Image 1 (tube, rainbow, N blue to C red):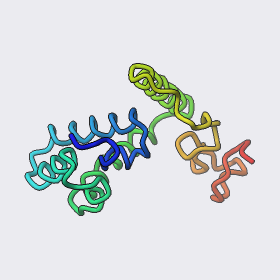
Image 2 (tube, helix red, strand yellow; image 1 turned 60 degrees about the vertical axis):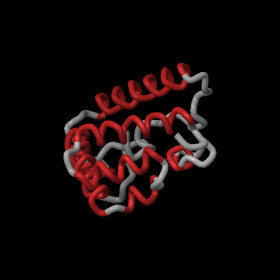
Image 3 (tube, rainbow, N blue to C red; image 1 turned 180 degrees about the horizontal axis):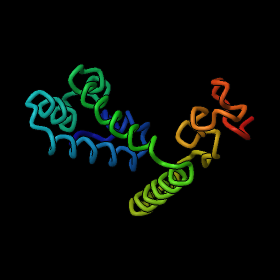
Image 4 (cartoon, rainbow, N blue to C red; image 1 turned 45 degrees about the horizontal axis):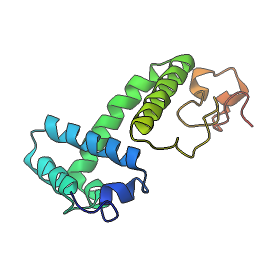
Length: 144
């Protein structure tokens, strides 16, 4: 592994060791699951430090792989109720806190999400056509 100060994964994670570790884990998971020789090569080059994360993200085949994964996630997410989404976010934050604690790192410097004020927890206006939010202007009920 290269010097952490020069490591593109760590730089991409803005120096956050826990997020860099999670990104590396995710890249290894993709590497282990794909049979595409090009994807395997560019992910391995990124993990080895000979290709930056930004270069990887700009690769058309990798971008297509990410798009497919995000589409699967979006379909799954859309079928969750707002309460289920809150639970998923809460569990994710708890897992992140446990990973950070295991690495001896402080909590991330982010405010906790508030229902209706983040894209992940926002109530979809299309789900509530009778509400004012159904106007298609993107404001969730109760959000200001």
